[in-house]
Image 1 (spheres, rainbow, N blue to C red):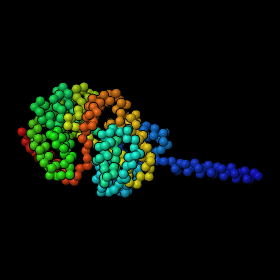
Image 2: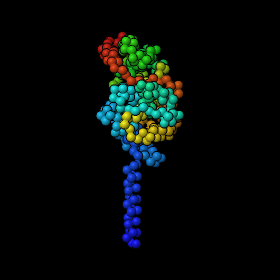
Image 3: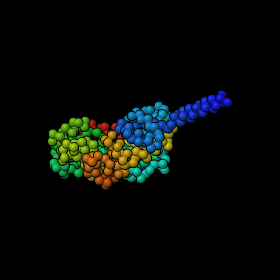
Image 4: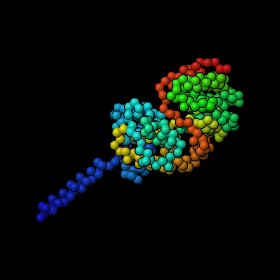
Length: 360
């Protein structure tokens, strides 16, 4: 009798141990390939508390994301966050992603124009491969008193700001000026001859504008020092740089150009061989809640595509954001699509000629 009781107790203990081990082994983990600041520890902890799902975060960048997924054929991670202009080309060439099931996305949590723009720019063979998360723009950083007349990129060439202007000799400047001149360079991406024609007109304008330029900036710190000193009152730069300056100089801030700020978006994309697809959708829907999204903005420094999240941002950042981006200006952002082969060669030659030319 005693032996049978011992066997029964032993059996129960062994069974309990096996059950506990099975539960631990079966605990779900989301393997997230992302950028620094996009998955703060406090957000990961809240997600686990709500869902029971662990999140293993691997920080990366666009080049590394593509390289890692190429090397494994799209395995090793359950959710990745490449920029939207890096998805279609990589998918077409390497098939490292799987299509998104949009029925599993809570679309009402997204800013509509950003969701639609990202869907369009990540579509391959009629299937959508990405939805938006963190975004930012380049546009105008202005002393709103001394450069009040500057409303668009080409206004940087006006007499009122002569010698007080700075921008980079990089492709965003070419794109911005093209839009400001009434042309759509993105619409010409698949027509090299048309694109070259647009770039030729921009080249002429930038050469005419050289006399207005104090210097072509190459680093954000250098530009901000030029603005702080008053040597530059109007520039083409990033939104976060303008907001940083606004903390120090009340008259300086980021302004969305009339023709539209130029925007980048880091997305959510499913690797081809994800093993925790349901967990990936749960994470997407969780972090797109406005209060959670505001926590990511605080960590990353950029806003997300979460609708209404700006209301939960720190008061000073909320004020700057809403001043720079009324709803109409958000909807007018020109989102970078994937760059077809050959266009960067055209742009590079234009920039070289502008740099080598004499100011008019």
